[in-house]
Amino acid sequence: MKQLKFSNQLCFPIYALSRLITSHYQPFLGELDLTYPQYLVMLLLWEHQSMNVKTLGETLMLDSGTLTPLLKRLEAKKLIKRVRSKEDERVVNIQLTAQGTALEQQAAETPLRLADSLGITATEVQDIKDAITPLLYRLKPALKG
Amino acid sequence: MKQLKFSNQLCFPIYALSRLITSHYQPFLGELDLTYPQYLVMLLLWEHQSMNVKTLGETLMLDSGTLTPLLKRLEAKKLIKRVRSKEDERVVNIQLTAQGTALEQQAAETPLRLADSLGITATEVQDIKDAITPLLYRLKPALKG
DNA sequence: TAAAATTAAATTGTATACAATTTAATTCCA
DNA sequence: TGGAATTAAATTGTATACAATTTAATTTTA
Picture 1 (cartoon, rainbow over the protein chains, first blue to last red):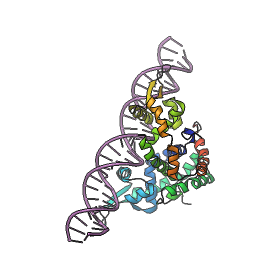
Picture 2: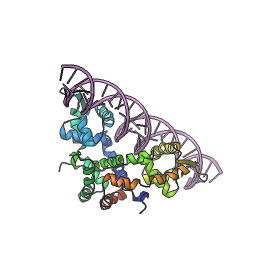
Picture 3: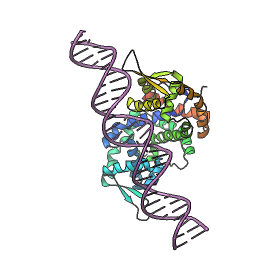
Picture 4: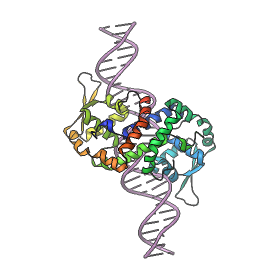
C-alpha cells in the first residue's frame, strides 16, 4: 500500500468530519449567537457552574492562547463573568451570568436537532464513539470523556 | 439521558481527536516546514501532479478563502506554482515545482512515523475508518475517499 | 448576440488554534 | 526566609477556517 496516497490517510476523514459536523451545528448555534468552541464552553459551565481557565483548557484541550480571547468574547456577550480568584490571584474563574444560565433553555433542543441534521442513529453514534474513544484516551490520558 | 451533558456529545471527541492527531504530525511536518493542511495539499499534488483550486477545495472541503492564502504560502516556499489556465482564465492550476516534487522523498516515512507516534494498529485504523466513513460520505457525497 | 446568470478565485472580516514568550503570583527549598 | 523554580493567564505572531462579498471570466438564454 502506498503510504502517501491521500486516500490511505486516516487523519483526513477525522479532520473533515470534525469540520463537517461543526458546519451542521452552525444554523442552531447561530440562533444562540455561539460558535462551536463557545458552545462547548457553555456546555461545561451549564454542567459545572464555575470552572477556571486551566480546567476548561484541560477538558477542551485548548490553551490560554485560544481560551482567553474566546472567553473575553463570551464575557462581551454577557454570558459569563471572568473573576480572578481570591485564594490564588493567578487563577481566573469563569462563572455564568443569569443570561448565560438562561441560555441553557434555548439550547436544550440543539443535540436532537443536530442528530436530525446529521441523519445519525444512536447506534451509529455509539459505534463512532467506541471506535475513536480508545485512541483519544490513549493519546490524552487526562481527558475526561 | 441529559442531552446537554458535555460527556454525551459526539462531536467533541472527533474535534479533539482531529487536533490531537494533527499535533502528533507536527514534529514530522515541522522537518518538512509544512503545516497539516499544507501537507494534505502536497499529498494530493504528489498523486495528481496538477489540480486546480476548485478541485483541491472539493477534495479537502476547503474554500478559496482558506486555500488561496495557503497556496500563496506554498508558492512562497517554492513548492508549487500557481498558473492561471489558458482555456479558462477563471481557473488557477496548482503545479509542483521540482522542489515540491523532491519533497515527496523526504515525506515518505511520515505515515509510518505518525502511526508509530499514535501507537495505532492497522486494525484500529480500519475500525475508525469503518465507523466514520459512512457518516462522512452521507454528509458530503461529493467527497472522494 | 448582448444582457443575465453562473462560475472560479480572491478579498474582507471574524474567530479559532497553537507555539513561544511574558507577566504576575505562588510554591519550593537550600 | 528569600531567591529559584513553577504555575496560570495573558500576549504575540502565524496559520488555518469560513461566511460574505467582490472581481473577472464564461456560459445561458431571451
